[in-house]
Structure formats: C-alpha cells, structure tokens
Image (tube, rainbow, N blue to C red):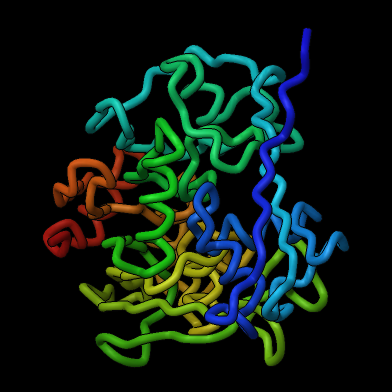
Amino acid sequence: METKPQEKIELTVTADSSRERLDKFVAALSGVQSRSRAEQLIALGNVSINQKVCTKASAKVKTGDQIEVVLPLPKTGTLEKLDLSLDILLEDNDLIVINKPPNLVMHPAAGHENDTLVNALINHTDDLSMAFGEDRPGIVHRLDKDTSGVLVVAKNDFTHQGLASQFEDRSIERFYFAIVLGTPPKSEGKIVSNLGRHPKDRKKFASVNSGGKWAETNYWRLSHHSEGVSYLKLKLGTGRTHQIRVHLSEMGCPILGDSVYGGDRFSRIKSLALRQRLQQIPRMALHAAILGFVHPRTLQKLHFQVPWPSDVSPFLKELKFHDAIK
C-alpha cells in the first residue's frame, strides 16, 4: 500500500510578522489555526526555521526566515471500538454534544487503552476530526475521569479549529458546580495564578512562581452547610489541566472526594454522621453543568445545561444544595 506523504506548509516570514513568537506565527497558518495545536506541533519537532528543527515556542521569527511545518498523519488504526451508549444532546454533520458520565476516561492512555470516550465515539461514527493527528479523534477539550457533564466533539477539522479558537480566545461559556470542603473567604471571587507541574510530585499540578501557564477561575458560593461543606458555581477563564482542582485546593476548599488535592480529608467535618455520609459519595464532586459556544459553520449560538447525575444528586438534596442550581 502506498504511504500518503505528510502534509507540509512552507513559507517565508514577511516584514509584518518579524519578531513574532513562533507559536503565534504557526497558529495563524491555514491548517493549524489554534495556539494549542501550534504549541504541540513545535514540541513534537514538526516545525523548522531555516531547515533547523525548533522546539521553542517562544522563539522569534524574523524577516526572510524559511518556516516549514509538518502536519502529522492521523493514526486511528490501532483504536478499538467500544459498544457504549452515549447520552447525545445534539449531533449534526459537524459536531456532537455529549453528556459525559463520571468514571469515563476521555482518550486512550496507560491502563485505559480501549475503554474510553474515544473508543465509544469511533463505535458511534466514522466522522471525527483528526486535527492533531493522534489517537484522540474529535477531542477538542477534556474532562477528568471523575468529572461528569457536557462537552463538545468535532467531526471534522474545520469544526475542530473553529471550536479550538473559541476556547483559546475564551469566548466559550463554561460553568461547573462543585461540592467542596470548607468555606471560601468571600461569597464570590477570582483565583489567578500560573499553573505548572508540582515541584515535588510530577503527577500533580500547582501554582508556580516561574514558568507555568496563566490560569483564571471565577467562583460563587451558592450555599453553605454549617458543618463545613460549601456548594460553588465556577466559571473558567482558562482551561488548564486540573485548574479548578488546584485553585480550590490552594484556596483551602478542595473538591469533595478529590484524593489527589486533599478532598478526602473528611476529619475536617465535625459531625461524624455527616462525615460518614459524605464518604459514600463515589467520586470527585465536580460537574461540568453548562457549555455555550457558537457553531463554527452555522454561527448559531448554542447553549447546553445538564443536571448532576444520580450518583451525586441525592447528596445535594440532603445538604439542601439542590435549590442553588441556577
């Protein structure tokens, strides 16, 4: 079988782009069209300046530089299909909006090679974007395994790029709800920091003094239980890995059930009966309730809201938090 050649983009830097960051320059190219994808291509060694591979996203290009970008081929042959019923809120020729259940990993990784959302997606449809040329067809944004809620999947590269641009410019509407240990210092506020790998535990993330990526989380305290549990509404200004979990934990209010960031320290709850009851919540109490975006092709404004699934909703009623969902 003849191997399809990798697609290459070759061009010369003009004066109006001189001194521009490499990732910004590459992101503007047709076929890339997002900063996150540009950063990934650079990190993979797929971008060259004057025939020399450059893996530094912050490198500056200058007039006359010869830039070459290699777009990797999609790799889907090794993915196995998973016969899993998906809760589809909307599907058309360009995208699928899904209500993701808890305890479902987004894409294949060590220990989860064929039991992920991606495996279920390729069982559902043959039409998925391959914008990153990896074993993550259709995936535009991610939710942690334990997190439930609404997400959008792209069926083609045009839609993927259009959605990724909205995530990048922060025009996407994303609201989460969380049950947390403790009480935020204010009824509402904004948490900002640079997030990077934890200096001592590389499996975790933390706010760092140097390096990292800017992260912004807005919160509203909707309700509070006298025994030391609060119900929060959260809006993402950025979408960094573990962002909400880290920001709330560092504020002293880890998400209930989040054992990585201190949400399993139930000794903070004074009432033994409540403590024992809360320990029965089967996962991290974080829910991606609201997602709003502009359809890249039709330009229609879309808005989706999904309630907490049944594994957590009874606890909300017991804590009298259910009326706070707005």
